[in-house]
Image 1: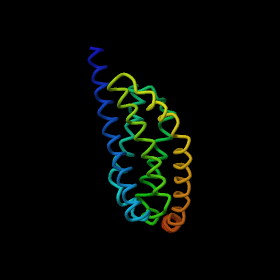
Image 2: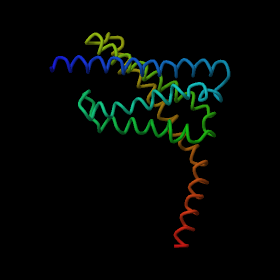
Image 3: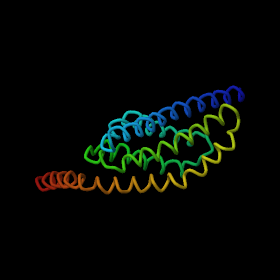
Image 4: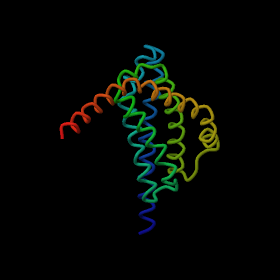
Length: 183
C-alpha cells in the first residue's frame, strides 16, 4: 500500500509541477512578446489569465507542505505564497490603474523565469529521481538576479497602489463612522 501511495504522490507532483510550469511559461512568453511588440503598458493584459492561474495554483504548495507531500516547511512556504497572492490579486487584479506600470513587466518576467526553472527542476526530479546539474545550478543561482528584481517590483507596485487605496479606505472609514454614530 505504501508503494502505491508513493506512486500516486509522485504522479500527482509530476503533473502538478509540469502544469504550473506550463502556466509560467505562458506568462513569460506572452509577457516578453507583448513587451517587445506593444510596450510595457499592455503586458498585464497579455499575461493576466495564466498569471492568475499559476500564482493561485501555488497555494496548493501550502497544502502540500501541511500534509507532508513535500519537505518544505509551512513557515517558509506560507509567507512567500501569500505575499505573491497579495501582489497578484490584492494589487494587480484589484487596482487596474497599476497594471500599466513599467515594473509589471519586470515583475512577471522575473517571477516567470524563477518559476519556469523551479517547476521544471521539481518536475524533472519527480520524473527521473534527480535533475541535471545545470538545472540544479540554475535553480540555486538565478535567484541572485531574479529575487531583487521581483522584490523591488513588488514593493514599488504596492507603493503605487497606495494612492488608489487611500480613497477607498477613507470611504469605508466614513461609512463605518456614520454607522457607529447613528447607533
